[in-house]
Amino acid sequence: MRAIEDDLTDLADEFDLLGDWEERYRYVIDLGRELAPLTDAERSEANKVRGCASQVWLVTEPQADGTVRFRGDSDAHIVRGLIAILLRLMSGRRPSEILAFDTTAAFNRLGLSGHLSAQRSNGLASMVARIRRDAEALAA
Image 1 (tube, rainbow, N blue to C red):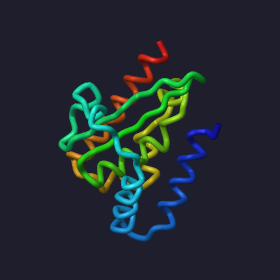
Image 2 (cartoon, rainbow, N blue to C red):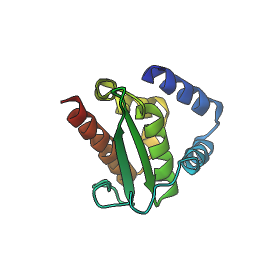
Image 3 (spheres, rainbow, N blue to C red):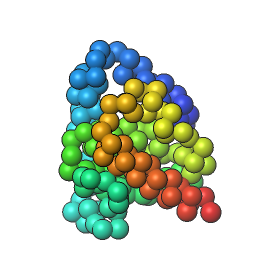
């Protein structure tokens, strides 16, 4: 299994190839387009992430090997892209890895933090909090 830092380095390298913020913005949207859609049943209140201006759903699936798989979706293109980045970094990890990882530093490294609106930053924080809360519950 690849280390979370290796996946972050790969993402950072991809973002470094892009020029300005507009190119990065389009790339984030493209990443979101690659997410597998959730079923109507998975778009439930139980999977809804509170604190996001747009509709966001996260599905948490503990795996037999002790890792946890996350899947997600949103009704907003840029938010779908942010979900795709989070899932690329967090899905398939052990809860201890998730809890030890600094997502704020990761998004700073990708050059995204300074370009997100306050609403999107709050929504991202809500998604991270949900992932961390689920990881904490599984680690207990």
